Image 1 (tube, rainbow, N blue to C red):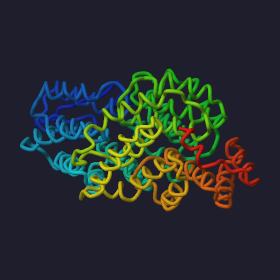
Image 2 (image 1 turned 135 degrees about the horizontal axis):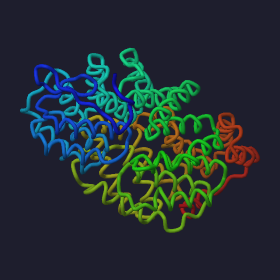
Image 3 (image 1 turned 180 degrees about the horizontal axis):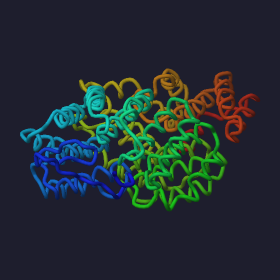
Image 4 (image 1 turned 90 degrees about the horizontal axis):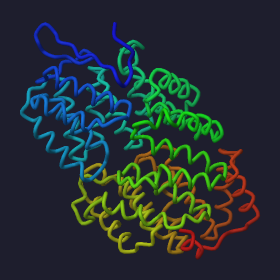
Length: 473
């Protein structure tokens, strides 16, 4: 009987052939007991999004350099973060694993990671699908596939990748909480909010430190436009879901988003300074949250003071040389960097980023598609809006609404494009379109103070001038 499936316990085993196997029953080639222990710890930390799985992975390699999956995990960790600086590390890890022994499962892991390192997101996703069809209890493959689905905006596979393996699981198995949490997020992104909430709540009941489970239920409340329920979900439990979690900032972003929906701008700024943009983090996923929150505040006319400048500084460091070949970039990140450069008034950085995105769009990898389809026109739109050319911003944004998922992110994150579109229509002087978009939002969010204000004002034809856009950010 296995123990409670949480983020602190794991039980590697040894079979009679002296090949070490992991807690799910799969062989780990080249492992010794110490390297397997560190590898299992790294995987468990990653499942809960806590601790330091990179450090645990490095300890696994130090303890057993021939542990193939330790090198593969190192590659996955540096690829899935979408940090440009992580790509060479991932390639180094895959090179180290290239000549090590593998079984079929490990070979499939290695091939999928190699596809992602080459920028072939779709291929990596499909390879992981095939892996989990054969090895349904491989939670690393499930989680990496789930994150790739998220970064590609494939909401159906966020749900179905997890649903396919459910028959192979039972609640006694280590990692069950994470399977529930991932399923919950996929259900939410496909609109099944009731089942998503049930799965997410069950996830954190089993493992209170599973940040993805907390995150999934937060998304349910966001999509239901239930900010008070969202605050009740996240605020009293913050010490639990934020402890040692590298999803703490993002879940705080969700808490701030609920406060924003209730017009609690001072509280939003307090949370921003305390745990979003004010932390000093230069991690790309954290910078995405900081940029998105400041932009939402700016669209409301809230004075964010000097908060744009340090975020723009950190984006410049995170993205590195804009003249590089574009490998390792992601359009979703580039778009959010443009928000920061626009907010900080950095014209030269905006131009350099656009040129980098144009280079990225000319590559043969999947990010070229993400950039051409959504990232580049969206970046050009926010730049146009800020300089007062709302008509151009409107023309660029309107075709993106139905395809914005193609550059990744969640429905909640991509709502920023809808909000910017309303602002652009208003400032471009297109009163009928602005009023129609406001009515659409009010129908989806009837209790939203912002939606109600927009609808009342735009129904009355009270449009803000385009020139004020420069002052707003």
